[in-house]
Amino acid sequence: MSVKEMTAKEIAQKVIKKEDLFILDVRNQSDFNDWKIEGESIEIFNTPYFDLLDGVEEVMERIPVEKEVVVVCAKEGSSILVADMLSEAGRSVSYLKGGMKAWSEHLEPIKLGDLHDGAEMYQFVRLGKGCLSYMVISNGEAAVIDSTRMTDVYLEFAASKEAKITHVLDTHLHADHISGGRQIAEQTNATYWLPPKDATEVTFAYQALEGGNVVTIGNTAIDIHALYSPGHTIGSTSFVVDEKYLLSGDILFIDSIGRPDLAGLAEDWVGDLRETLYNRYRQLSDELIVLPSHFMIIEELNENGSVGKQLGTLFAENHGLNIKDEKEFRAMVTGNLPPQPNAYQEIRETNMGKMTPDSEKQREMEIGPNRCAVR
Image 1: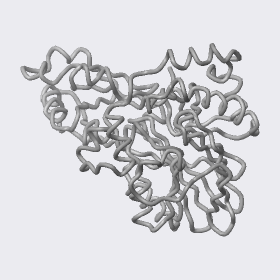
Image 2: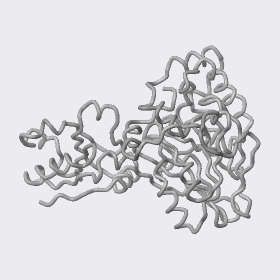
Image 3: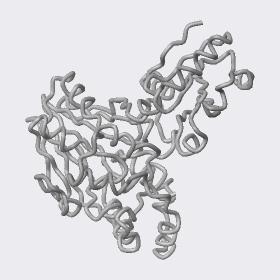
């Protein structure tokens, strides 16, 4: 039997559509335990490649005959060798093209809905990293929010919609992934907006993004209203788009809240976090659809693969929004902080412009899950 390749996009579609797939992950156990492909209809089994060098007989009984099977490794090479062995043993299998690196970098664009006067809102779902970014398109112009370093995806998507990117915004200085905002702005001559309290150490020019700023996209006047909302970082800023969507950055997620410690100031910033969640957001309409910059678990995906929920629903269901006692809130937040993101200090310095790692180094820095939320 011949071995086929399966792309990250094909796996993403299976995850979103909840189609059955069996994954044989042949990375080391520690890498597998840290980060893997997940989905409601995904069955996954890990056995290191080096344990299969003498043959695949011991894993044959673990591999179902009735399901589509794909072999996964870090970069592709080992999975091809294992897939070849399984094929020679009579099994129909594929391998993940580009390995987990390709999975980490894949962005799946999903239309969220229409805004007024024919404008549109899109979410880019990075399933392999839990990152969410956005594009607002209005009358031939586009704004990109919280972009990843895979800048070609946004440029090509805007071009396919015959839109020119005129504004690029980051809700805060990211610490778990490398922003593509500055690069997109340079390539398109767009205005790059950053919260100034997060940008005190950046080495490049930017437009100060402060609470009360209004960024207009297209002459049909789709407005992005900036709302200062510190707590994850001191400069964190949310956006209300067309009075319909609340882009919450890393302050509020679907099933959790943002962590305040990525600059080592958890005790100082936890008060800001509570003020944002319990006062600033309470003044907003419950009808706003919350669109965060990350998701934590695959169950947060909606039926179409997007991530988002009404603010009123989150006030009812999200535990982090329902702790009345401030001392209890502080204890919950500071006592449930996950490990720091991989290479987070290097990522912050890259986003400040203080270092310029090559593309391979950037991939290595981002490997692993996002860790932006309080558990």
